[in-house]
Length: 250
Image (cartoon, rainbow, N blue to C red):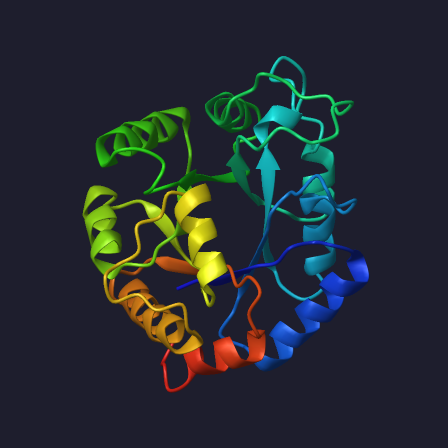
């Protein structure tokens, strides 16, 4: 069972401090995944190479629109040199800096290219249960599997019943279930408006509710022989993970 933490790479010193804290305080976490956010100078693959000093398993997010599918994949030498053997391919959002070069490369294009040219790289892609209908998301998942994807990271779930539904739909797939604490009304509205999340009736934007749900998700992950990743935003890591991992056998 793999338990991953998503860390935002604002700068190298801050990232190292977070990695040291997590390594020391929360030994159940054994994998790091890092989004590629163009507003920061530190790119995901650079942050993953720093993370290798703390964790063997580091998974950078790779934005397909940053790469020309007609040309050799420019990061392969860097990934191999730093022993980064897994990536999460996402389409990405258009950068606010209009001078930055982007390409019409979809995640399906890049997955196909990487599996054909660099089959030693394990490729994950995203599942978003709120993006569209379940049928449309299922069909998109099938397209990604056909392109050669090896597994999936989901957008955060807030309802175990929805996790169970997707688990049946994705039986046999290598999955990292996403969990993200939402501990304020402002954050709840953000998830509802930006990500179209429908929270369960019993949801409360409190640390206690989110710890309880995270423990349920962790137990379900173990029960189904799958994986989990945590995406804590604007929450006290110590208080959150002390609650999540307390008396939980992993």
